[in-house]
Figure (spheres, rainbow, N blue to C red):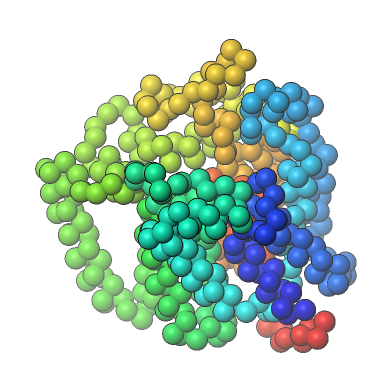
Length: 424
């Protein structure tokens, strides 16, 4: 059974691959293995309020549906899709949450090292032999979204994660897990350090603007967690770093930017050089894609706190987008529109809104209550809390296993239990 748990853990960390590819970014293999394990280990006596709340929210996700979703989806509004695979997302999330929450002590930290190595290996395959990479990934993922045999641009590499942002997210979740297992004395120091180097390498190679945020969070955490041991050195290094950064920013502004075609570098250059009436931080395409749906969903929530049912997001976003536009340069080349049935929909309202944007629109205050209890009942690990919430807030779907691994550990039971279930 331990092997099955770690196979489940592995596919949770690499959720975008499968030998039998399903037409979605996240493949169902981790949920299938998790469900089979659950048949053997499920114990309703373990249930507490949080488990019951999760089940209730899963039932709500399945049953509270906008009756017009099929019509809107058939007309080309992809984020209106609320077919059965979307409706059972709450139950799929619960499988990962439950197994990690109660059986995390069966997970082998070597799986993290292996998953990091595999992703790094496939990044290098993509760099040096992009045609081979395309051929392999075409067999085990839904699609190869960036074809480096022909693409020339600022976007980074995806490894086994199909999108650079997802690769950066994978690296962040591995950093969290690496810290968790190291503090439980389940990871040797050499592997702990190797894992950190691979995390930094993957975020760098993703060239993702979101990855910049993840890197910043990791650095803050490392400084915070080690401050009491290295406080004098950290203080001196921080002063030197801030001084050099200020001088570098001034020099960059004089010379019109950092040289390079990296997407993250382009974003930094934009912040330092451009001056306009809009909030510069939100003008990058990647950040606009994330912030526009969030702000729009908040306006929708303001008018109907009880939600509008699954599949209701794009039509409501179309109605409320004008309130959001004032914060952005909606005439810029990044604020693109798609014409459907005579209406011009901003691309951000119909393509890949985050879990937060969709579920706040769909389920309103019930989603907020669900999140409050998940985090309020947790063991208050700051890094895991921030990381998992950012996954929900930004462009990761609700069904992404990264989210529920971290939230499962945040609410973990049997922290000090020995491996007494090895024989199950």
